[in-house]
Length: 351
Image (cartoon, rainbow, N blue to C red):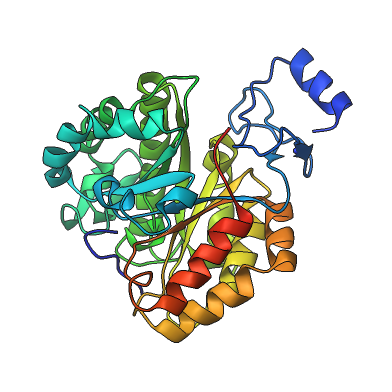
């Protein structure tokens, strides 16, 4: 299983009814102001207002690049990026992030670019058995801790931008399936089920912190893109695992997944967008063949960034696509040109 490295629209009548109901919906980066409804209005688990799924204009994507704000702006495709992606992997990252809050972060927002914060905790803390209100849970302890929620407040303070400015997109717990002691399956053991239950609580708490402290924050839960390749309904494995997070997905501002298979990501991106698009807008939070294979990069980009494929996946809900880092861009002129062609033809900026 893949392990990350350290630097890792509405018809008028529908809108009218939604307004009467007092629904506050999030408008995706734009595009031309054209939006449309996709699917039925869904209810927030546990009560609250229903939230319609809202998508951007078909055929356009907000492109991003990681892994760090201070390197993204120097990329040869920097002028074509609508967002800059950076990573939080552990409390060790607060040193340089605190410095960014003084000038770099305000400057990115002033350029009318979004910031995309990927929170990956698969290497933070320890693998341990911890006690929760659900019972014993086994997996990475830091994501379940009160310390993580304290650190979430620090992240919200550092990355907060004005409410009327570009968004702060957060992909929280990327590759969440790998955090318990056994991956990818809800009922692998009782301790794994309890871990996922507590992780959902932590996600809701962290999302609340970001919403209260960063007025431009839009929060998503981060999936590994491999999850849609199989299904095991009896144990909640494969595609069925996603259904166990239905309640928190319906409360999220958008949805995220990574695409990092070393052989091909074309089908993973299509499948995960179709599944998660039922809940709202979708982002490929980080794309890169994990082993750096140039042939996979080339084949992926040639297959994905065509008019027909982009039309299909944006119609299904995809609005954003972030390259994990710039290594492949620097590998050879052909690889760079593929990325330039994609960002130039299909790219847009947040509205």
